[in-house]
Length: 126
Image (cartoon, rainbow, N blue to C red):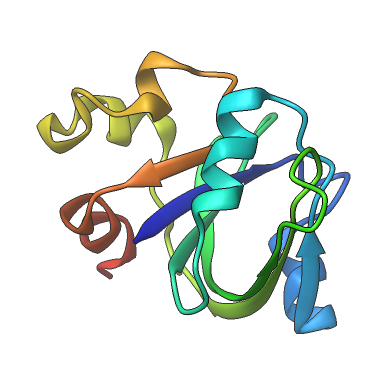
């Protein structure tokens, strides 16, 4: 499976993840986003997306482990992948027919978004 994780770069950026190498992705409160976190499995591919002024994909990561001992606050450990040189802007995502039915566009405030394999490939291609 593949997911897109949104983060405000002033709070925790992809550069922070690269520096830390791994982090626990928590603090999510939206019920749908929490459901998506609980569904993650080790090895799942992730896209890190900066919100705010940037609104673009910035890097990749992968799921290391998922702790759902507290289902209301799952703790997903992720590890940094590679930086996406150009990234993909929100405008480019909106213009791409592969994202027409994506929760990324239908539920704009959703912070953990499932992606199809095709969507992940599109976002990670140079």
